[in-house]
Amino acid sequence: MPIVFGKAPGKIILFGEHAVVYGQPAIAIPVTNVNATARIIPNLDAEPGHVRIEAVDIQLNADLDTLSDDHPLAAAVWLTLHEIAPNHTPSFTLQISSSIPMSAGMGSGAAISVAIIRALSAFLGKPLPDSKVSELAFKVEKIHHGTPSGIDNSVVTYQKPVYFKRDEPIQMLKINHPTHWLIADTGEKTPTRETVSAVRALHAEDAETYGAIFRKIGDRTEKARQALIAGDLTTLGLLMDENQHLLEDLRVSSESLETLIQTARNAGAAGAKLSGSGRGGNMIALASPEKIRQIETALLEAGAVKVITTVLREDKP
Image 1 (tube, rainbow, N blue to C red):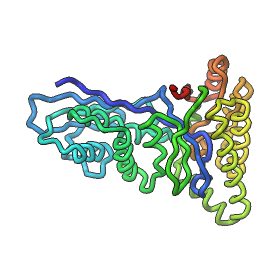
Image 2: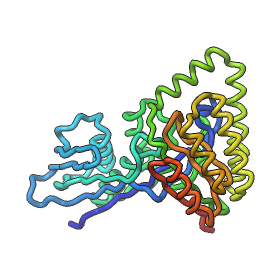
Image 3: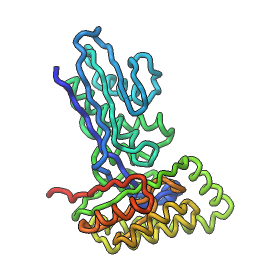
């Protein structure tokens, strides 16, 4: 039996952070320059059904049956086996690696689940369609996050940008013109739960003021949807800058984020803002292709610990 691979990209939020919790829309895109990879190696010398999981990034090297059912990696394997229900499970080693930064709002957990599901279903001779892969990955996301939005598993499975609004079906966006993006990491980590709780407290104290900010973010997200589809860099950039100011009003920005955001703008970015929960973490910038390298260099010189570039490509006719 041959070695089988499965792969899935990361993701990043463009618009709608925090406001999405209060019923406003959000937009996220795949980040294809970073990926999670699952490799399945047949083990012909072991007893049938013996499964070994190796994940160097988290120092895991264990047999499947020694992991709890709610361990995310084990859950992805068990859910796939249950879905396919093979007559017998061959012995194999599952090796997992990822270049997606962890705990950075880039969908690393969902990408790993998708990579495992794709690799294992192909190994068993029954590759699952994207709809089923996303469905199973969403079940694993519930173990990670309790009540996930469904954004991460949708973006990384279909490798398409999504428009999301709570209690409405997720919509895939059809892109007519490519756009180029840079993601810079401040190196500072603040738990998402902490920033979400802080924003919730502000809203509880003054629902009128902060509700208005959420609605303004939602308005920028709605406008950005059409600009993204059309590849309108000027409009997208202005909306990103406006969204950043609104996030500053929510007190989720930080000095390090604002330094990198201003650096990107000064170096020629069409627009820039924080991405994710804020108070550290990542910022994202939009640029024309010819300015990518000079912006990347400027961000690194300004203190970014890492810069990832990605292209959101147009849909094929």
